[in-house]
Image (tube, rainbow, N blue to C red; front, side, top):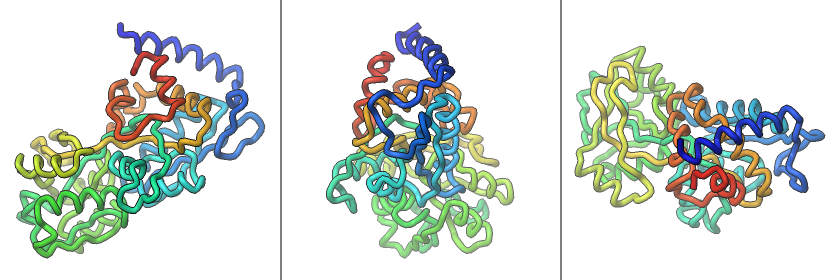
Length: 329
């Protein structure tokens, strides 16, 4: 048995004893959220209810609240990663789910994030994956077939939109008359079903709930990238990694689809007290092997290497200290 597994069991036992004793907030620390006596009240920024991010945020809020009785986490819906970064920066939320490409841009002062945002990671939650969905009757097979198409690209400034534009730029699609329509994933699926869009792009965990619902109502198809196109996208966007959408992820999907993705992170401000970040990380670690029960997209959290290694931004010092003590780093 590896060291991390041994530590994991020991920490689980200690945590359960501590929470039963009503351990409260760490001594000398204060939450960036509100507090009622010994109860720390935190808010987590998620996304719209049609995607995996909202589902994952709800699961994390519930898991932390149940695992550590000194903390209660409330949910705040948003337009996604970009809004969550700004909400963390302003103190409107205490935790937030942020796609790794957006987190990287924020920490490094790229795109609209100037000056840089002091963002830190608690851990990875799931992989956001590029999904292009069209009606099976459309005749489209590859993403590069979408010449002149109307594409649902997620909310404005979301990582779904940014990754769609990154892929389209790599494939020179923007020069071929495509139109990006900003809409939630839920609205995009509905508009595709009505014929108001030709395709929908989602960059989130698999399966995307709204696209599963659509595929149950009408035959749909996932579009493909050629190997050369994927290589180009990855070369131009080093934060992305190659991955796959396994066969059977969506109703009627018979083949595995090669695509690209990025880790979605549970983020906090660098100003969060170290003891509180440690406490949150411990709560997440103790339930990480069960998070896949909430959503299949979160299965990877059971792997310590996925949770805390090869992240696009630095860990919070409190999180890093916990993972080191647990033998995961």
